[in-house]
Length: 195
Image (cartoon, rainbow, N blue to C red; front, side, top):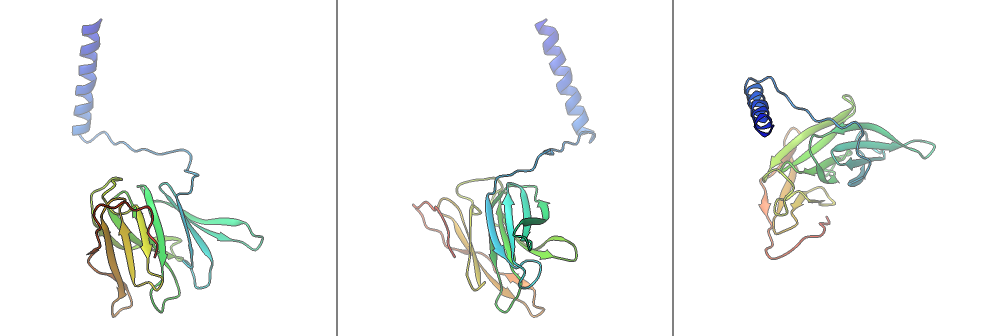
């Protein structure tokens, strides 16, 4: 029986290898129930000026919520980001009337999002890669802090690495982001970043 079992396992492994190399095997993971634990929440004016809203991160779901006239909080839009959101923060450029959302995730990138009311969802304005993917203690993304005047964003790791990005506008009033400035501090552990 053991020899038959071993040959069956070998046949199964060979069949799976052939199926994967032929391009016929595609795997997709889909959860039936959304995450309910909030990992981060920030407030701002994302969809319109003077529109009070809350951006909520729930694992890999990014929600935009808004209070109604009765005091209940309603979800305007919920977007799946296909990664784990580690941190979120808001900023507003000088002279602007709407806020941007900065997202640090396990992809090794910092992403700046803008809510577009016409499309009814978030649109990526800028994406900057700075490290390896995965949740690592030396890769920035665990902590994000913004300057209150919207001039800079700092992304930090649990250990040592911190990067600062200078934010500005170009001649067409589009958001521009500088190359990262290193603000590393060795032999230290970070528990929070505050802008």
